[in-house]
Length: 237
Length: 237
DNA sequence: CGGAGTCTTGAGTATCTTCAATGAGCGTGG
DNA sequence: CCACGCTCATTGAAGATACTCAAGACTCCG
Image 1: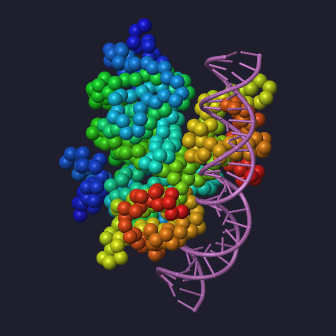
Image 2 (image 1 turned 90 degrees about the vertical axis):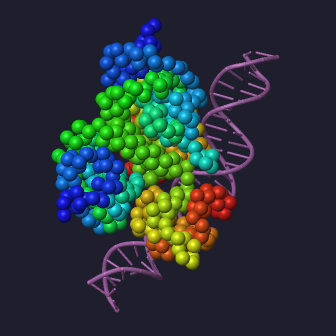
Image 3 (image 1 turned 30 degrees about the vertical axis):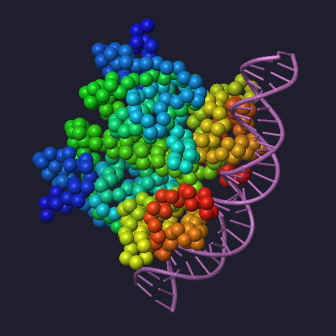
């Protein structure tokens, strides 16, 4: 019932918090406010002032960016252990993206007022945040490169690959399978495509026999085929 | 003829180096090695070990990423004042991108051995680097969002907009113009398109009367039209 | 002038979008 | 339990967008 118990999951999952020493750590745990959120809720909106940061203990959150014309896309997915909103906090600016809960999640919130002193006092923490920013930079750059070079099919296979790593299970008799944590529209937004195009692509893949979608269940004969997707796309289609 | 003179441009252009106090600053200036490079040369290659960092004093450099299939794309442009290779240095990893000189540039190189102590000693410097990483993150995310939502035409107009800011001049009688610093192939790589598609798009824009390309010279009747590109693309084409 | 590199154009094709209609799944209330 | 309405997903047809391959034009430089 202590506060560090309430958010123990976040304290454990986020490497940044492991740097905190005991008196500070306890104080910090007390400042964390856990929330349980369902798909569709938002943590913050693009353009909003940053009131603090969010740590994902479980579930899945998407960062969405909208442009002036009303178009929007999911920039990337955030998984347990990720921190949201720390960039706006450090830069002292408004949030540049919206954070949208995609699957039921347990998330801890820490108010800005509890962080300012902590961050400016703790060099190791800032070092960690620098590492995190660099890691995210690599991730976004990789995504960017993929968008620049690959067509929809390869991007979908690549996305399935990442889901395979986190949500993939060995199916008893029918090979392997993935339980998709998000719905079609979200996948489409993540790929920069229309839901209709995604649907069509899915039936194509079905016909090719590589990957079979049944609702949120994806059956794969051989997960390694997701990686060689590039080759098959040149030969098959 | 002193060393801080040789690279005075870099010392002035890069905010990170302004943090250095005088004895250290002089020492640092001595470690900088200036180079003058022409289009087509490379600073480092994807997968190479990081030997140090590069500061752009003048010119233009592109970060290129290639995937396993041989496709490659320009992730982004680096302008005077930018630092290249600091990410690989901090993460102690190989370079993830190639750095390719796109226009004649004056660039200073600083060996890794000269930096390690400096970075670990100087908190303000690390703070600056964190800021830089965050700024780059915003930049790449914006690009990513654009790739996810906009078609080729809007992406080209957006690119022209950025060139307008750095290379745009008011033409005496014929309105406004931009002197493109890079060639078609590089623009295509930057947009994630084929040179042929870019060429076609350019003639379309010419027919619409918005933007007229003549070699590397771009004539624009009204630069603000580049921003409203989105609207016109919905109405006109 | 010749030649290499760069840019444009043409024709045919593949990919993706749009809009609208249909279908499948699910919870609710009768 | 089933019918209803709701949301989500798929499909069809037509059109726009971008790609491929190949040929031609342009430019710069020797």
